[in-house]
Every structure is written in structure tokens, then in C-alpha cells.
Length: 240
Image (cartoon, rainbow, N blue to C red; front, side):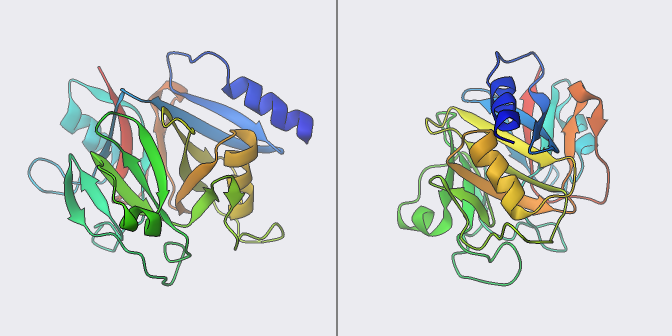
């Protein structure tokens, strides 16, 4: 297993290809990883210029035309009307507040956290109560939970022997904030498994869960665009 983990790390550390997404295997489990770098046009999407929910990769692409998505995925939990459950900031405008209280479901499994795209283009994953104490400036931000990796430690409630398995996705950020790695499992995994992939397979000290079961990826370079019912917040890399 150690040898496989090293192979996955070496593959992901190779020079970046034109396409930002690639597949990887960690402990016999397949994943797809998409990378954004500081300074690239990474954004969050929720509603269009008319105020209507975008909700799908196809509608986002149409709104961006002639530009397009290099990749995109669901990016945080949402209510039945697709509005964000926690903090949501788009182009510096906050439309949903930060939630720091414990609650039901995965979102309320503290510690949860915030993915922040700073005005200078760097990225951060910040535990929600830390975020509340000293709110950073974010051009875009989405809150979700639970945290997967917190300063190099796995979330304390994750169990290696858990039998709760879903397709899951999330984001991890490099220590210098210059790389954001978006991961979706290509098999059903536990929280513990995907968290270890972020930490031990990708070498990231901070990572945040986005969702499970409804998780979807748009990666046209891999010939993939998952479909399903309308989504809430979506994160995507925009290119010409």
C-alpha cells in the first residue's frame, strides 16, 4: 500500500499537463483530481445575471460563452431551494451567513470549514470558528463540512471501520495557498478513506468535504460531465 501511495504522489507531482484533471489510485481506490493554481480564473457559481439558479454545468458554460469551464464540481451543501446552507460569497458579495453552531448532518459535524479564494488569487481552507474570529477577505467563499484534514490531522470523528460509503468530493489546499486540488472519488468511499487520500496521497494539511452521493464532476478533457438534478453552489475553472 505504501508503494501505491508513493506512485500516486509521484504521478500527481509530475509537470502539469494542458488539462487540469487527471485520474489517480490510492490504496486500490480510484479518484479524479482537478487542480487550479493561484492566478487562474477559479470562481464560484450559483445564480445567473437574471438571478435565476444556474444549477448545471451546461447552464454555466452557456452563461460564460465564448469562455468555458475547464472543470467544475458541486461546491458545498444547499437547501431544497438550492440556496447555500452556510457562508457564501461571490465576487466579494456575501449572500449567506457563516454558521458556527453544531447541527445535524454532515455540515454540522464540527469542525466544518470554509473554502476561500482570496483577492490575490491564493486559496485557503479555514475551520469555521477560526474564520469567524478573524474573517479573511475572500473574493469567493463557500462553507461546507465536515473538515476532512485539519492541520495534518484527520477529523476526530472519522472511523477507519465505518461502513458508510458514498461517492464523495472535496477540496484541499497546499500550504502556500497556491494550489487547490479538487477530488471526487470514482468508487464509494468512507470519510476516512477520502481524508487519507487528501493527506497521505496528495500531501495536503487542510481539506474540506463538499458532499456525497450527489457529488458530480465536469471534466471535458477527460470526456466526463456528470448529470443529475440541479445543484446549488458550483466551483469551476474558467478558460478561453
